[in-house]
Length: 260
Image (cartoon, rainbow, N blue to C red):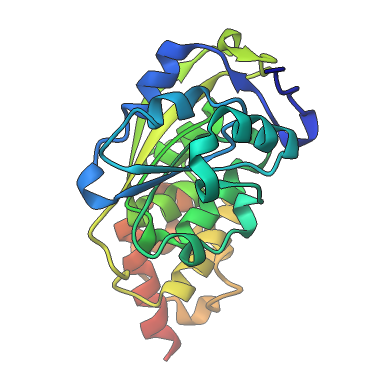
């Protein structure tokens, strides 16, 4: 079987180290929460080989690359409908998975943030995610309040998931090697069904706060709530990066109260 050629426009960097592939697959640990797993961008199937050895769940693969899809059809003829040639970002989760499922993958770095926001939009159907990302993105996902990596993605993910940085992966184990380090993280859905505030306003507050992260929240959020309605709480003198998820929820509650 001829190999699949990595395509730059799809952000493909195929993992070649089987030990790392097995380690990634074994990082899925909450099997009791789902019966199906979707691998995103399987390429030539180095993760898939280990996923398909697992009896705890049923494995599905999705790849937008027609060449990869045809390669995987020949490699895994037993998959049938569980091998999907489509764009993950356009996939209607409920049409394929009637109940909860996990997501795993060596994700294309050029759409990694879009993948994470797609997962956030469907968070109640996805109890666990294990993924390889550019190290910088992995650090943003797992960053704590007060660090320079902490930002919009950190707050949104940590509002609904426990986010763990698992391990760093060097460029030499990919073909072609990326120009950056990579890292594997695990996201586990927390117990928060809905935030204790207006969630739409929460998202607006977080985005506005970090879009002008050098400004105090009083200035950064003046487009959402005028300064004369903000009140004199200490939070207004802080910058967005100082606030935890809990702090952002409390700030959203305060804004809702002051706007009425």
